[in-house]
Length: 231
Image (cartoon, rainbow, N blue to C red; front, side, top):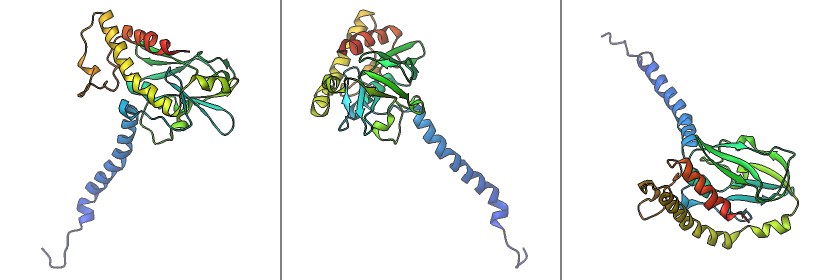
């Protein structure tokens, strides 16, 4: 080799380096997107109950914002048990709704759950940018994940029908036990063998527990867990 000659690393390895860097540049955003698509928002043990947010016992929430509008969303508990779903909106902006009206439907193939309004009023907006992400990992603040905006008619009355703060904590502690009872009842009703997915080590309900269960179990969950809590 000529004493004055040298190996140009960038000419011999440059393409490989560019390919590697390009791979990582594309892989990281892809990984983040994949997590947002696949991961449930929270484990049951990590369900959030932020200050100032009222929780309806049908597992929606309501938050009075500074403009006097009520943000409405679906709570972490329901998002954690359903697994991946799509949301089909039943009501549209401009519709008048009553507390307990059917707002939207969660759909997983041939299984579905009705979601009810926690307040009465005029539906002023549907946050369509959140419809596919309400049950997925997100770095947004809790109340920014609202799905519906409602101008309330009976807020002073209806907020007393929901729970907040310590009452919400006490209510949530009983929901896992109630869920376990409802699923056990449904399994017996349809003569199904209890599935290991129902319980994790330590006896806690598994995340996405409804995902692998039949439409009949979803119907039972609707009537005995969601509808039974309406007030």
